[in-house]
Image 1: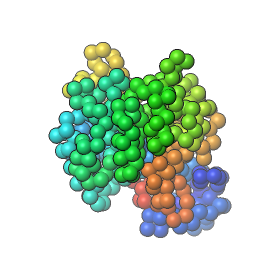
Image 2: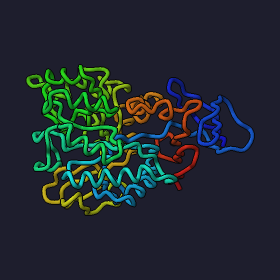
Image 3: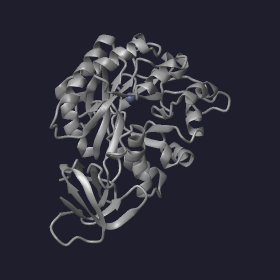
Image 4: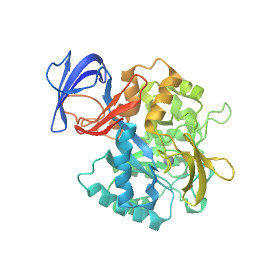
Length: 382
Ligand SMILES: [Zn+2]
């Protein structure tokens, strides 16, 4: 397969007019200039590495918590319309039985071959190991302090498919953090009321990822600096950012970008099941919610109830809020940083020789035109 007439965004360079050769789903050649013979003509549009969402709970009517294989597959097929080529599937606080069932179904899903969709990389376990003080929409009665015995049960049920665990580092002594690192799981500090100085212990042990910066954590205060301050201060902590324009004010996105730079951010959706559906009334677990535009709120109180924005919306919102982001800086926040963090950067996450052809085609307004997973076109805009 040849892809031609593309503005190709590489890790450290942009080719203003170039072409790619793909063989068996792998990128074999990257060239500058025009290609005269037949090929997929991108007509001067952008070609980027496919987006990777490391924090999402559902969409298109699918709530991952229901734990059905069919739902997992539907999501994987639908989410390519957002430019997503890989994702990490979230799980929220639930009873142990429900979580074990979810993990078991998930391990079956991970064994399935030939799903014509985006690639699922594993689980992002967001609860139960979080703080009651910053629990957000999680169920208070089901929270547990971080503990290795429950974690082991979940890891086993998932068949070692847990990749990220959100936890409150202040509610454990460091052994939980060590255990995650020893098992190649990313410790992600989040939903915690930890102080700046308390963060040092687990930072020294090795946490370098935080769950949705500013949302569900101790913040930036001159008197009581918390996890948000700490993760802005440390250059090598990767911050998940929900850049839907609702969970973080666009002016705060400017501040985050100024401090962290493109190396310190990964854009996420944290989306729930109504993402990608029409405006209307939906259920989030047992709660009645209303989706209006990209916003989802509780029907009764109007309080935000999860995120409803698509990944491409968040990319555009981030891009437009900052202004003047170079495309090879943008791809750090959508693809490169998180694939390095997940240890898959040798295979995907950027456009490079011998990497998988996981690609997205965008117009100048960053609308998704095509999504290509391992060389197969799985989405084309009408
Ligand atoms: Zn979440």
